[in-house]
Image (cartoon, rainbow, N blue to C red; front, side, top):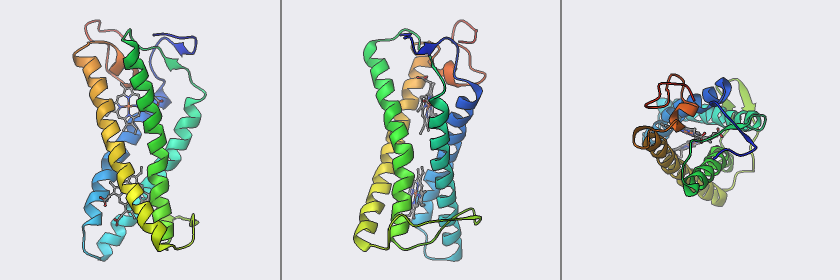
Length: 190
Ligand code: HEM
Ligand code: HEM
């Protein structure tokens, strides 16, 4: 339901770029994390770890920029839907934003507590968040893994809801965020 803080139309170009660009990076970093962790120790494994961490740090920076940008934007109004669905969507968005920060920060904490160095694509050295600490290392590793799976679960729920709105309810929810997608049945932009 439209409120005073919503506007007609769809999410702007930069919001859509953040949204779909970050999805693209998540689709790389999650399988990479699962694959690399099971490899035997080798040069290749270390390269993949470095790549995983660099992409993860990029996602952390993008999450901050995205949140900053979002604070300057007004939310496009949703099509009419039951109030519980709007509340569920907002709660899911809050959880997704929280996890966009918590998961990479837990990875960084794990890396620091393990005493490993951290670089962004071999260009920028990043400081350790804490001194080496074996107990914290295990805790941060668990938090990183659990957080990553929770993020995957919320993304699946969120994507399923968006697709349900498009293909079953046939409303313009998906069109709000997706370039080239029009509201089903009307053929017009939101
Ligand atoms: C949003 C960003 C990130 C996502 C979604 C993500 C996801 C994952 C996943 C799914 C795994 C595999 C977990 C498993 O063992 O089953 C993993 C492992 C790992 N991640 Fe991340 N990660 C992210 C960012 C980072 C960052 C920023 C760092 C470090 C600065 C990092 C460091 C690691 C390390 C060291 C492992 C291997 C853990 C081990 O050896 O058991 N990750 N990550
Ligand atoms: C196939 C996967 C995805 C689909 C189909 C999808 C679809 C959508 C749609 C249609 C919207 C607009 C709904 C609205 O304005 O309330 C939206 C918004 C949003 N999506 Fe996704 N999404 C996907 C993946 C992701 C991922 C990976 C994330 C983050 C981890 C994410 C985070 C968000 C957030 C936070 C919003 C609210 C707008 C904002 O504050 O940026 N989505 N998504």
